[in-house]
Length: 64
Image (cartoon, rainbow, N blue to C red; front, top):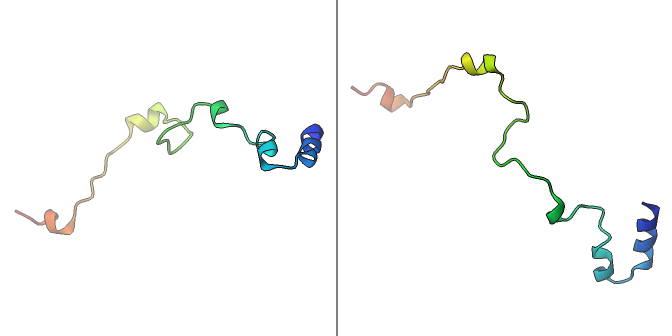
């Protein structure tokens, strides 16, 4: 860590400091969850007791 800090001080141009970034590059990222809302998995009990609630619009609710 200290060596990277010293290297940043020695580097003078922006091109030289790009490779010294403390953030990981895009190629090193692990697999990301796409569209995930919660990291907690659904338990079997929650899955069996799930009741889907459908909310109707006022106009369509009274249509005959």
